[in-house]
Length: 499
Ligand code: BES
Ligand code: MN
Ligand code: ZN
Image (spheres, protein in one colour):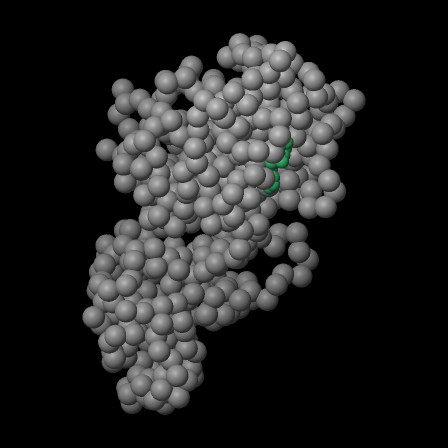
């Protein structure tokens, strides 16, 4: 990941040429940086002529007034002072990144008169810029004209002017860790499925060793020995062998129990013998979005040296139709010993996760297990793309996740679990079947299936099928892969579980 921006943080600057970004509240007349870039007091006139009201996330792009030491000014609206929430600063960074449009030298006057000034704001603003600046164009011979990068492919030099520059610079290290983690997750999801198979994904995870993460990669033979018949049943139709990757970040005290994150990593989901329709099947390259989020999160935790012991486990397989593929009617034995009748080979994610969850619980006895998975189309029918589905057996974990989701603006909506839904996956021939038998409550029956593999450990399942990819663009994301989950879980760890 090469960043399109190069940041520096200073208390004051001698502006000469370039683009200035300044801010205005809708309920305060003063514009930040005006004493430097608006010597003739021309901004008021410009805003009046353009009918610019400084509504939140609005912008006005003007040629610098004569006498100004800068060439171009972008005024960004903040709305009313009392209505700014923490997450707005990421969005404002995104708006600025889009607005500077190819400029290679940019000065950002962040100290808003009448507004709150702190280091976290500057760091969040820069994070928003980095997230908005993400591009996935490595396979395009002719790159899109980079709206958010400097000219000639060189990173734009961004100078953020703020009285808290020393602290801001230190906070920015966290922003960089988060941006790189989110953008890593996006890269993994955007990568085409011929390039990123299970072993290639595992090799990417292995690169986290450079940050101090311990990474183990289990091969098919080792998984066979462990009895992971559910995961292996999915993998058997592919010529590309599966991998189980175990990542450990030991930033806490040695005796602290670890916190575990488990991801579905189906590098491509054809549906198998229960094959999917052709239209839109290309999107199933993103069926490893859960594994990508877990990998991105481990990157963030290690890069910012989080004071926590964290485990990341990802099950990497490809779901293909083949002479050796598993059939509807097959019965497989999971690592837990529980048997599963395969009704639909397209309900493969739960089969991968059940062995990964069981393995995680047995080996690590974690404080909690949070799994992320692009598990069901049904969750999109229920919630659309603006909330991921949250299923959990623990009310404290639910509360912590829901609040973190609001603060990170990666929102969750809690869905029900219960005996009646659980009964829907009882099987005539085995301990359970891998679908509920009808489409009714499809996201819930999938969650009930996972629940049978977590024992009494506090557990949450996030169904991210309609948030990890293909979600509508916003201020901080214009990519198909969103990186959903990385900021949410980093927020969760930072707020509730780090010591
Ligand atoms: N990977 C899909 C779910 C999915 C659908 C993710 C659309 C992203 C976008 C999953 O493996 C799947 O095929 N689920 C089936 C389950 C059904 C067969 C019980 C589904 O949702 O239709
Ligand atoms: Mn499927
Ligand atoms: Zn799938």
